Image (cartoon, rainbow, N blue to C red; front, side, top):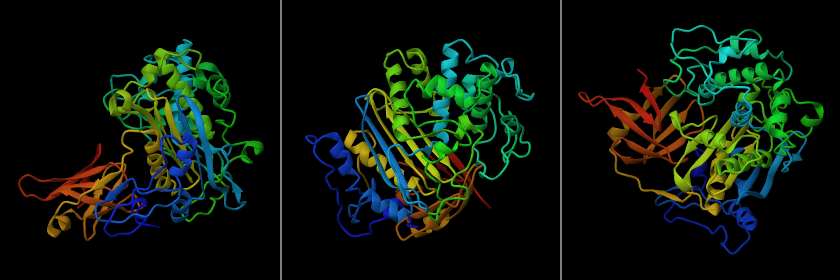
Length: 480
């Protein structure tokens, strides 16, 4: 695989910035054209980048198919499928092809939980053990209770980051077995190991507890409950939390593909952790959900949650997180977002509620992020999104000795990172992922060529030796 999406065109002395159409053209035409003349969103000064089509990028990164939906002024203005839904059958991706939303299941599920809060069935700040009947959060040493608000904001102190899913030919655990880490569950028990409310830590385990809370409080199976509260009222006709899928829906679903481009065994994994990872949907249906949250946020009634609830949902808390959704930016640039990573699927959703704009992109490949990021930026440039502007990196002069000192392995509880050296900068490989080039911006500061991120190396004040690095909010220690 190529070193990075932003390095697909190789190097010389000028920068190419092709036109993505003019403002006089219909937006559908401009969006279509933007994906035919793409260039890397982050470029290094002095290199040449030839424009390429999204299908060229998909072919280079071995991504069989993607699906896209765009909302402008509160309405879906463009949907498009590229490539194939299943390399075995050759079926084309269409706007109706269902993909696994993966973790974008969480904010949609949070909408259902908040609807139950609006109805007085659940309490945001009530200890959840008062309403759980089929399982209880085990006793712990901390004084603060686990509440629904803390579950949705990832501040409940609960463990288990995410879930790998289950092959279609294996036995599925119940939700209680998942929470207890009991066979046939393939993840550890979900337990409180931090003071609830003390810090932000992403927990798919916590969202699975919220799923059980919703079903215990209502007595309804989770797929039927979400269909009643959210999916059917919003016209999300190609969406379901059914796990596993029935035969009719499975025929409409994309297959998950591994890094080598081949469908995984059984076509896709099954996720009994439905609220955390189990939504099957389309970009158009997710766009309908985002538009409903935007409308409620802007004071409109008639959606699944009240306007005041939507505003609370999109209020930034710890970790730049709201009630089930990430929040970035301020004013006109404020946006809510989530990404999704399931076995053989990738997805991203970005929505600007003040601008009433949304982009949803879904891929049926382990390599999907290599395509989704550049596509989002290309479309965002047409929509005028802050942060979609072309970035040109000017390399700073850093000594070879300094870069030698930075080479090594760095670790945190969630990630490992190997730092290597190039002629101009560094190469990073996280958790055996694709290499990403880092361009020096100062003595111990490097910009990443796959997005807006930066790494800063940390040195011991007395010895000057590298002790770790900071990557956005993540701090990593250098391995011995």
